[in-house]
Structure formats: C-alpha cells, structure tokens
Length: 397
Image 1: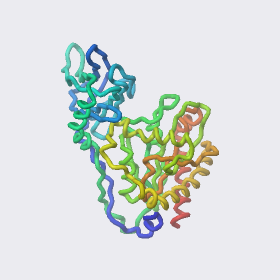
Image 2: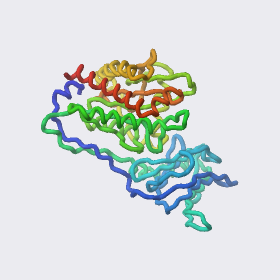
Image 3: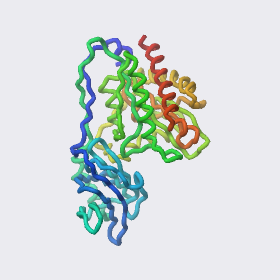
Image 4: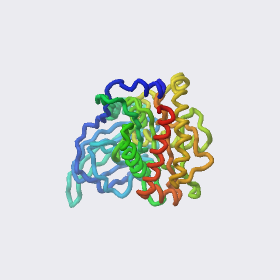
C-alpha cells in the first residue's frame, strides 16, 4: 500500500512497540579482564568477573562462531574486542540487549568445546570463567550447531504491537533508527569515538525536535546502547505502519581527506563501487553480533521488491532530494554524489519510504569534530527535521 493511501485511511488498528528481552536479569557484575591463551592442544578464552556468570553457549556456521550470552555486565576490560590466537581468529563483546551481554568468538576452523569452567574467587583473584576449544571436523561442528540452534533462535526477541490509536486522528509516524549499538560499535573515529554513540545522540535530538510538532509521532528503534538486528529495525517501521524510516550512520574509510554527508535509498544494484562496499559492510552487523541470519527468511524477495517497493522507492527518492540541500545548510559538506543507491538491508521495508543517512566520515578530522559536538549534532538533527516537514507538506498536505 502506498504512503499517500495509507495517510488517507488514517484510523487503522492498534499499535505499540514492545521489545521482549532475553531471560537474564540485570546485574552489577563487572568484567575486568578478557584474554586468550594458546596451549599445545587447545585455545583458552578467559574472562575475570566480579560475580558468578549465568550463561548460554551456542555455535553458528558460515563463518564459524561461538556465541556466549550471559547476564548484563559492566565491561571494564580495556577494549571492545581483540585479535585472536590459536583457532580463535578474533573476539568481541558488549551489550546485546537489555539484560543480556554477548561475546562472539570468530573461529578460523570448526572447533569443539573441551570444557567450560567457572573458578570461584581465590588467591586474590575474582571469578574466572573460561572455555577450552580444540579444532575438530566440520561434521562434529555441524552437529553442535544443530544441537544449540534452538537456544540461539529463542534468544532473538520478537516485536509485539498493541497501543490504541489516538481518537483525534492519526499522526504521521517517523521511525528514527540509530545505526549499530551494543556489541556492534559501527565505525571508529580518529579519536576512538564509536559510531553507535554519535548516531544515537543525533537520533535522540531529531526525535525531540519532531515530537514538538503535533503532526508527528516519532519512534526510536533504540533509545540506548542496545543491539538490534537489521530485521528488527525494519520490523519496527513495518509493524508501526510508519510513514518514513530514517536510518542514521557515520562512515569511516581509509582516506582522511574525504568528508561530507551522503543519503542512500534502496537499489538492488548499488550506484557505484563505494556504495556497494558500504552496503556490504553494514549488512554484516547481524553477523558481527552473532545472530544466525540463516535461521530467518529474508525480509523482501523477488517479486515483492519488483512490485511492492516501486512506489515506496519513489517516495524515498523524493525525501532524499529534499534532505540533501537541508544538510548542506547545516554546515556539513555534501558532495557531487550526495544521493546514492545501495542494497542496505534496513531500507528493504516494501511499504515504508526509507533513507539511510551517512552524516559524515569519522575518518575525517572536520567531520568527526562536527559529529562529536552537541551543536553539530543539533544542526544536523534540525536539517533532517526540516526535510521531514517539507516532505510531508509535499506528499500529504
């Protein structure tokens, strides 16, 4: 159903967004150290913790991974992740969602777990949780995946809807998606700042500005440092029957001289190599967080994209063309290729006009300075809000 027809039949249904969290309770547990050790017959992953952990472990293929979910913890270890040793190629950790922290071990070969141990405090050391892994056959690893798949699927929450529609009439719904979050930090700036922090700051400011207008109802896909799968982000827009979806990001590339904002709308074929590479990198966020995408159907397939999305994509382009000059007036540079097309998964809601805004490059000193400052964030948020106002005046006066 097109946007204008959905606006005209405004009194439909009941809606509420409720995120169902994983079954762990919030905890004051601190993780003070995370490390790897290599032995002749195994690789050991160790965490030092202030409290005894409760945990679930599951295996994921393509690529080989071990995922450890536990109660929400305070990460006091020095970094978000680290380089690997032995059969563990790399590891990362962080908040998966409220009540659950997650560790993902990327493996360079199929492995089996030799043992899982929790050592109680002794000799001045806190609780130590470690697992020993050893290289094994593909068949044995595949069996481990099968045995733990049910737990993994159960750990991914669903989205439920149920809040009554205001009797005075339907507001225009704008879903604001702060890119990345939790265990997925996104890009890292020159100063070490994480993309997930900056996107959330701009998203909150944009929500505040738009909410002051009685025509709009804003919905944040995340309001804190929590991980959301790409599918969940799209579902927030679709199930709230939103009229516009804005995903906010900030890129980082190898060249520090490149800067400026770019607005992306959906295309099955990216408009250039850079857009294709960026879409590929952002579409990996579910893999980074250890979500098994193979266990879920794709959001949009074949004929649905060709037909249902055609009208939606046209509205997305209209908004993008209004947004670019507004960003330029905010003081952020926009280039000659400021509107691009890419196959971002978060743009694939077939019935919701959607854009992905790369606010700037964290690899560029000037862009990073703007994105880190509250005034710069506010200017960008105001520019997006102004484009939203103009868009709805154009298509739904």
